Length: 163
Image (cartoon, rainbow, N blue to C red; front, side, top):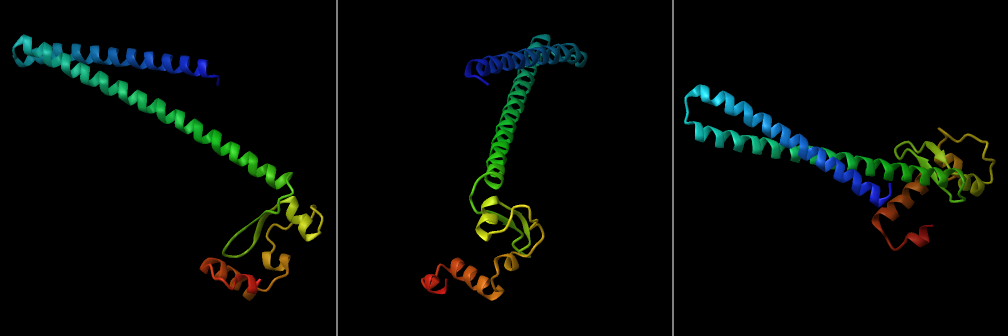
C-alpha cells in the first residue's frame, strides 16, 4: 500500500475511533445522568460524575480500538513476512542450486531435499527421498556422524583431523 493511501486509511480509522468513543461517552453520560438522580443526590455533582464517567469510558473505548487496529496491522505485517520467507524458501528448494535437505533430527528421516542436493548426490530429481534415512542416502556410518556432531557441538580443535 502506498504511503499516502496508508496515512489516509490511518486517519479514517482514527476519526472513526474518535466518533465511536465520543458516542459511547455521550451515551454513558446520559445513562448516568438519568439513572443517578433516582438515588437523590445533588444534581450538580451527578452531572459532573456522569460526564467524567462518560469521558473515561470513551477514552477506554478509543484506546481499545486503537490497540485492536495496531494488533491487526502487526498480524498483517507478520503474515506478509512469513509468506515472503516461505516464498524464498520454496525458491531455494525448487530452483536454486543450493544443497538443502530437511530431515527429522531424531530419526534422520528425510522430509524434503533441494535440486542441489540431488545434483550433489548425482541422482535424478525424479527420485522420491521422502522418508528415506539420511545416513543411508549419504552413505555414512552412524558413529562417524555422531562423532562429527559431537565435535561440532563441543567446538573442539580436532574437528579438521576428524573430518
